Image 1: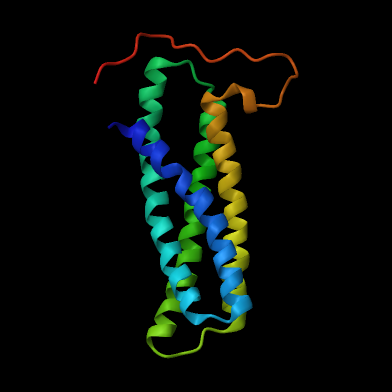
Image 2: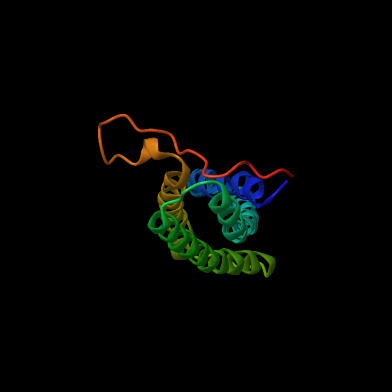
Length: 164
């Protein structure tokens, strides 16, 4: 397994995970289920860990692809900026979630405004990760560029594949 494999395996977790967590946080608020809220908080922290792996496996994956394919540098750089911003936003939201977990450990009630921030923040992150994923997909999937209606030719390798 190389960095490209690791990146592709982990990069989907924050996108799908944040959408799922948004639904779980909404359900916990609607049902007033404290246990589901705490489980969702722990899941968000787990998604952050995998998002960190995805982010840091990106540059080595790019180097592997850059050796074999001709890549659009602007797309790669914009994807990297979006991914970094998403990761930092998720770290900030994770601090709010971590604070809520600590409040629970100390038998304090988590205020409604804090729960609202977590729900809205998770929704915002889900959308933000989706945009970053779209730009990541544009690196190797020209069919999602939406820039012309003409048929799109697949990206062709510039060199022979590297043996593992």
